[in-house]
Amino acid sequence: MLELLEHCPVCGHTGSVPYLEVKDYTVSEEVFQLVNCPSCDFVYTNPRPEANGIGKYYKSSDYISHTNSGKGFMNSLYQIARKRAIRTKLDFISTLNPNPRTLLDYGCGTGEFLAAAKEEGWVCAGLEPDDDARKLAIENHSLNVDRSEHLKELPSGQFGAITLWHVLEHVHQLKDTVDQLKRCLSSKGVLVIAVPNRTAYEAEIYGPHWAAYDVPRHLYHFSRKPMLQLMDKAGFECHSIQPLFFDPFYISLLSGGYKNGSKNFFSAMWYGMQTTIKGKKDIDKNSSLLYVFTRRVGE
Ligand SMILES: [Zn+2]
Image 1 (tube, rainbow, N blue to C red):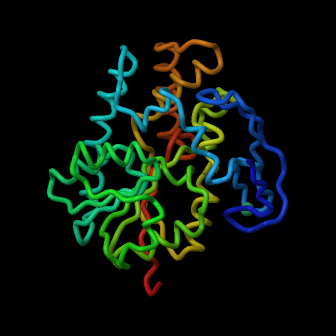
Image 2 (tube, protein in one colour):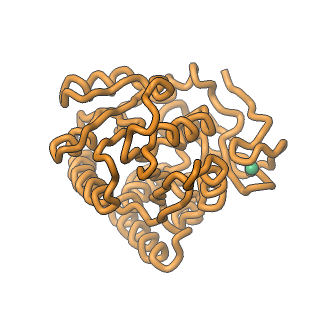
């Protein structure tokens, strides 16, 4: 069943205007409508599958973030890139000097990032809605991983760092989740959120074929202004914003495949590079952005 949102999930404005029609290329082949909030410029998938009905849209071998069974050249490449990405993410978190060294990865998937953090001495916890992914995280890495609903039961102020790597765009209860994350963060903690960036150069190039729309799994299509508004309302301050590396190439590869029917390595390299170059000049042109938030003093 689909649910229709009457209000903007960021600013609460009633009513929205059509933005783009996008097809689900990975699983259902269904077409979904993206709408734009005229008040805060947020773009979201509307209508969208309900929380208890969205599971079927994740059932695909292509949905690689939940699987490790990589075969073939592109998957091997993806696995290598993923290892590098984990290293980069860990180094990045360490530069933020979180206090205490306790880490919650919300939407931890099969737990590779947490496992690497644990090896470096972090006290780690994960939350993950997918039963299979959660099981793998626990069995393969002996991690402490619970269902996502468990967020409400975690003690307040416990985590020095909370990370959401391409997760917030999947979360039905957006505002409640952000509020709970704030509650769980220590007073000097950092909340790290990486999301696709809707104003990316690649989104202009590929239009409705831009892979990071990824409907209906992506319920929200963040850009800088609405993201900052959402977090400001929840009592966060923005510490920094930067591009997330490795994404432009992979997203271009997928997008080209959706647009032309086959993946083209060289054109992906070209557009990935173009996005990176343009993104260096203008932060809003990057294909994904990495936001760091801290709790506003006194909140
Ligand atoms: Zn709005």
